[in-house]
Length: 574
Figure 1 (cartoon, rainbow, N blue to C red):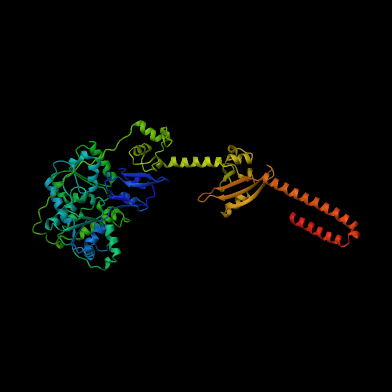
Figure 2 (figure 1 turned 45 degrees about the horizontal axis):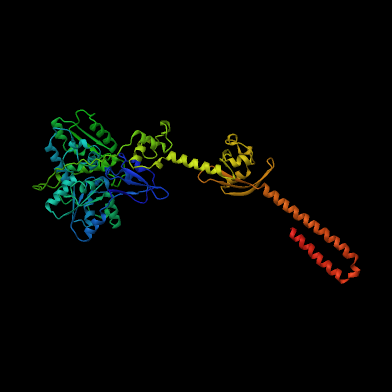
C-alpha cells in the first residue's frame, strides 16, 4: 500500500481523478454490480495530497504513524518532536508559542523547530553558488514530480536536503538513539523521510491535523497552557521558509550582489506548466534559482493543515506577522558550534513508462462507448479526464473503465428503459406537470388508437379526461381506479403514480373491457336462471292450490318448503 489509501467510503464520483494533475488514480470495478473504487497509483503519485482534500466522502487518507508514536510515549521512550515552521498558520492557536507546551503535555521529551536545519540548508545553497540554474529541492512534491515524470531535469535539482532532514540529522548526530517525530502540513514528507534513503533523520511522521485531533482526544485545552520556547536555537530569519518566496528571501542579498535572476512559483498547476517548458527547452537562459512550491502560497497551504477555510493570504500574513514580531534582540544566542552533518542528497530516475495504445486501439476503445466519429466525442470531463481520447488511453493503461463515460451510461440506461417500456404489454403514458404527454408506448398507441409521433407533446386531454392525473399531481399519491372511454368502447383499470424527484406522472392502463363484458353476461345468465326458477315455482303453487283440499296438511308443508326455496334462490341472486 502506498502513502495515500482509499477507504470503503469511496462512492466513485471521479472527483479525485479530476483533481489529480498527473492522473495517478486508478478506478477499478469490482463485484457483480461493477462498483467502482478509486486507488492511488503510488509509482505515479507525487503525494501532493490534493485528492485527500477533494474527496467529498473523506475516503482518502495518508498512512498514519500516530499509533506507533503514542505507543512509544506510553512506554516512556524519549521522543523528540520536530515541528514545521508553518505551524503558526496551520494550527488554530491564539498564541503560537503555546505549541511547545502542548507537545510537552503529550509527553514529548523535546520540542524543536526546523529553522535551525533551515539555516544550515540556506548556507549550503550559498556554498553551491549560482553558476548554473538550480531548482530548489525543498518541496518533496516537486522532487517527486521531477524524479517520476521529468527525470531529464534531475541534474537541475539542488543536491541539498530539506530543513526537516537537516534538523533530524542534527538530533541524530547528538543522540543516535533518539526517536524523532516530524509534525507538519505536507503528505509528501513521509515519502521524503522513508522512501528516499534518508531514514537517518526522521523516524515517524504526523500531520498537523492528526496532532490537533490527538490533543482533542486527550481533552487538552490549549488555551489553558502557558507559552514556552522551543528546546533549541531557532534562527528568526529561517522561520519565513514556509511562505512562497521564503527561501529566496533568505539568500536575496547574495542573489542581488551576484546580479542573478530568480523565480518563485506556487501551485502544482503553475509548477507543471513551468517544468514542461523547462523540460522541452522552451525557456532560454533559465533563472539561476528556481523556487517551486506544489501548494499555492507555500507550505502555509499544506493539505494536512487546519485553518484551511482561511484564505491563503491570511495564512501567509499570520506567519509573516509572527516572523516580524520576533525581534533579533529577543532571540537566544546560537550555540558555539553545531555538529557536522551531511546536507547533501542525490536523486533517482523513478519514472514508470506507461504503455501507449495505437490509433486503432484508441478508436476501438472509443467505439465501445458509441464514439465512432470525432463529433461523438463530447470531452465533457465527467469521467475526470480532459478528453475522451485521454480517457481511452487511461482504459488501455488499466487506470480507467469503459463504463466511466457518464453520457454513454446515461444513454445506455435510457435505451434500456425505452426497450423495457416498449416491451410492456400494458399501455403506459407519461405526462409532465402541465399534462403534456412525454412518452407513450406501443401498447398505449394500440389501446387508445393513436400514434406516438402525433401524440407526444400534445395535451393529455386530446386523448382522455385528465382528472385522475390531476389528482395524483395534486396529492402526490398513487391512485388505483377504473376508467371508461366510451368513444373507444373500452374500459380500463388504471394505476397512476408520480415519479419521485421529477415532475413526471406515469399511468399504466389495463384493458378490462372483455372482462367486464363477461361479468355482465354472467350476471345476465344468473338473472335469467332465477326468473325461470320462479316461474316453475309459481306454476307448482297453482297446481298445489288446486289439489290443496286433497292433500291437506301436506300441501301447507309443501308451500312452506317451496317458499324457503324461493327465498334461498333470491339470496343467491344477490
